[in-house]
Image 1 (tube, rainbow, N blue to C red):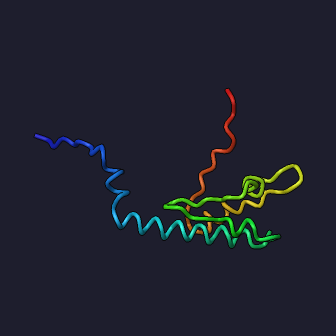
Image 2: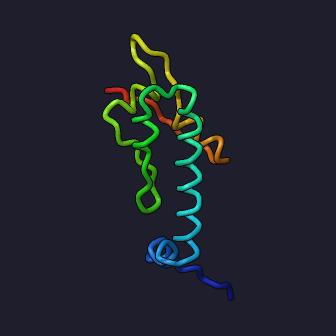
Image 3: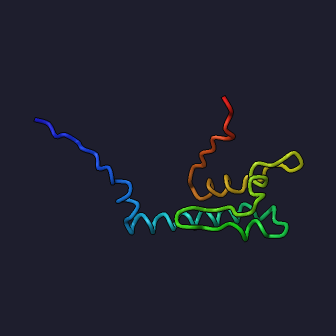
Length: 103
């Protein structure tokens, strides 16, 4: 007679509510934010971009309305890729699916 596995539907919620998960994610989030700021330093002009990199819970927010232009570039500006380089410098993988294509 074998053992039947029954997945816990609340596993992810329970895991993410734990203090170890919360403190680990906080540490990673702060590291990523700091690496993004370091990656942006060579492109510093006013410092607005660097000052606006914020952490909330377990997320890093790039608050300026032009963050996508700094990241991916535009017709007149080359991409700086601050977020992508910062995430990689923190030892993580940046998964970018790119722009969504219409079918």
